Length: 247
Image (cartoon, rainbow, N blue to C red; front, top):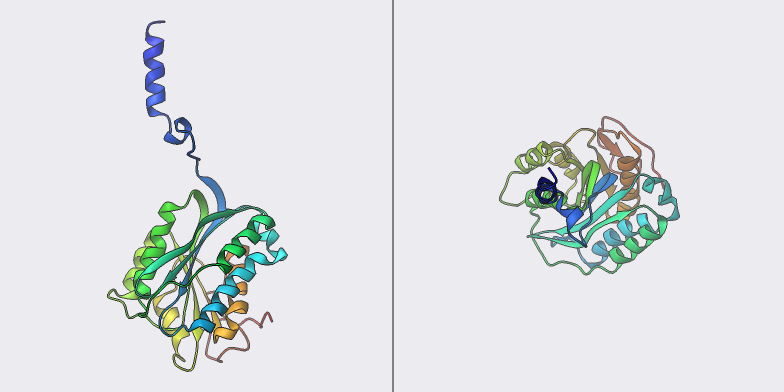
């Protein structure tokens, strides 16, 4: 029996998790929510509009009021999309306001990715793939997709949406409604939003992006959200449910 012990020990070590036996590798951290912020950088987004988007997302994490949203852990990645996609801020796990402020600084320092087209369907698929690289086990996985135009990529948006939702990922939308795309919110509702509890938060132009993104983030983390949310200042289109402005 004693001679068999080293042999048995060797088998146990062989089947042990790699993270346990390999220095430097960490086991996945459990977090309540993992979010990919997927940001439009297509040709219609000029330098001023890009800055409004970047500052709007960074402002969420620079605000001390974010502390209650970090209690159970939050994983965040930021991806820019257009003709292709680029991860400008890789997965970061937040549990303290200090960590959130450091993330805000990283977001504020990002350099814009090149692009012209609005290949939204491909962006959805790329954002979904990012979750495979997250060093976390998340209770909820969310793609937070914002943009100012409909898809002109090579794949149908509903097909891409359905594939992503089938992977257990929720897609929340933030259409930036402008005079050039006055019906964008309806298009997002029909083609982009998907998954249990998914919803829209409408930005009435790029100037309203920060308010809309902050409210959307709060709804995403706080719990069940409405299917369709619109601020009182936005274009008054029919909605299943209205919320007052959080200005």
